[in-house]
Image (cartoon, rainbow, N blue to C red; front, side, top):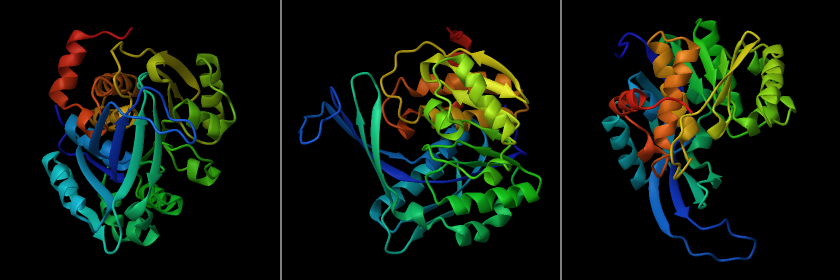
Length: 312
């Protein structure tokens, strides 16, 4: 199943997630009691690397950790997940990135992040690992590490003729010349609104937003719409793909799971449509479990799920 010749490089963040399940998000000045607490490994870059590797892609990760005790546990977990970690380094006198996550009873989350060592993933760090990027078949990026280093990484990949994929999360405004380097972009509704100025309410507004992104020079666009599935647009031709119907317990990491699984399917020469379907199945499985990385499914689980389920 796995295409052993193709190599994915994920460049991005590593966080330790402190997850508190609450009935409702706290108001200013209010103290609330949580129902459940979990410490889990997360960070968008790490989640996407784990999702790619667990679903079957050869994955190299470029990232920074703090010089703290938890860093060793994280590195051990990456190794167990089959990720190549020779470009993941501990930065002296830094702490590993932290995310403080509230999850309410509707399975929605609100998150506060301290970047810690992730801020050290600068241009010099990227240049030091440029060979990994040049030798890979695709580069996968998110926005939890410094933007100038992402721009640098995209330039290195493009000059070597490699595919550049951007998950533009968390939402921020991006320079047009950076967007022009991107082959595939995967915003959710909030991120697509930030990039295009279009409020996404339905497939018609998703199509409008996709068109604006095409006009910025991006050929392939997937706008993720949560439980409403995705809007897939290639060179101006769009279509809606419904989501799989599952009981969601925690949506943290679902988008990251989608990204990693999507890259695996593309590496197996699936069309973007088929790859999106496979990735949607992986994300659907992820929302049925708590935590970011703990919820990321393995390939056997995704294949099993696809045998049993049809999208709603």
